Structure formats: structure tokens, C-alpha cells
Length: 199
Image 1 (cartoon, rainbow, N blue to C red):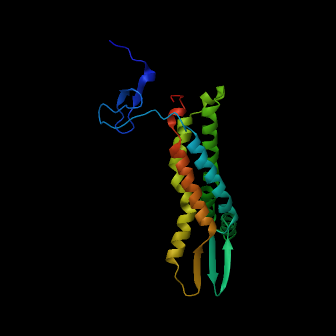
Image 2 (cartoon, rainbow, N blue to C red):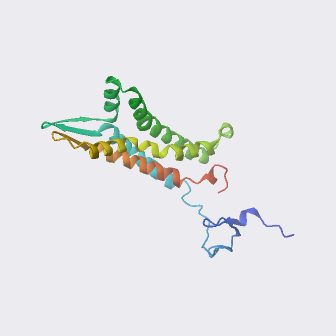
Image 3 (cartoon, rainbow, N blue to C red):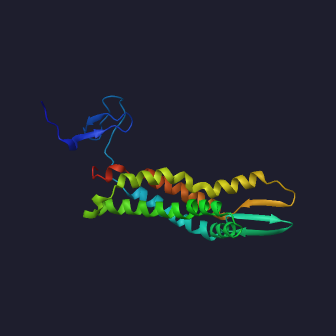
């Protein structure tokens, strides 16, 4: 039986077949797709997307998310302002849902992705006790729920057609949507194999 060095084995990204790396012109033995080792830019893409998401998250919290125009006068509210207003009006469940979806989840995703990206570059002994795969899948599972603020604004703008009331999505809605989008890209660009040091 011929023994093959595991470092020379490469997985096809399309059909998952294991192949022997023959250099630059390697192709999959099963489906014929071109396969290559992508050792360059292992974490740079994730870092770029993550930094962009964090930068977009700042104006998402500073600028108004919702602008309400009634009888010629306009009123705007930020994410935190909207949460406080809902809490003061007794809508505690809605306020809590928006707080978790708009503040807790995005910040938690930022922290988890930063931890994963730093830990694969500078592994520590205590990192072995933490299940990084579960943390990574958590960021992907809760990702779409971060868009709840944007969905609420879109639904309100579409449903409320009263004569004297107009609801417009503020600048923060665009910034928040961009932040969520780039966070999803950062999570998607992160290669799980880095957790186990396979690449």
C-alpha cells in the first residue's frame, strides 16, 4: 500500500473529493474542476469585511432610523431612542426584541468574529477549552435576525398610508443594513479550517 503525505492532499470545493495536489494545474479527479490551495488572504478578507461592518455600525446608531412626518412637522428617532420610547410607552416585549436584535446581537457578532480571527493567528492554551466551531455557527445562525430593525421600518413605511402621516427610513437604516451585510460577509469569508490549523 502506497503511503501519501497528507500535506499533498487537497479537497475539491465543488464535490468534496480528495485529490493529490499536483501544483498549479491540479484538477478534480471526480468533477474536473480546477482546485488550488488558497493559503494567501486567509483572514484578510474577514478582517476587511468586519472593519467595514463596525464602521457602518457607528452611523447606524448616531443617525435617525425612522423619520415620522405628521401635519408638516417631522420627528426622528435613533435605534436607542426608539427602544427608550417603546419602553416608556409600555411596549416592553417589542423594546426588548429590538434591543437584543439591534444592539446585543451585532456587538456579540463583532466580538465573536474578532476573537476567532485573533485566536487563529495567536492561539493560546486556554483557547482549546472553548468550542470555536459553535461560536462560529452561532454568528451565522443569528445573523439574519440583526435585520429586524430594517424590516420594521420597511413594513411601517409600506403599511401606513394615512393622509397626514408619512414614515420614511432614515440614514441609519441604510448604514445598519450595510453593517449586517458586511458582518455576514465577514463570517462567510472566515475559513473554518483555520480553527483547527489545517491551512
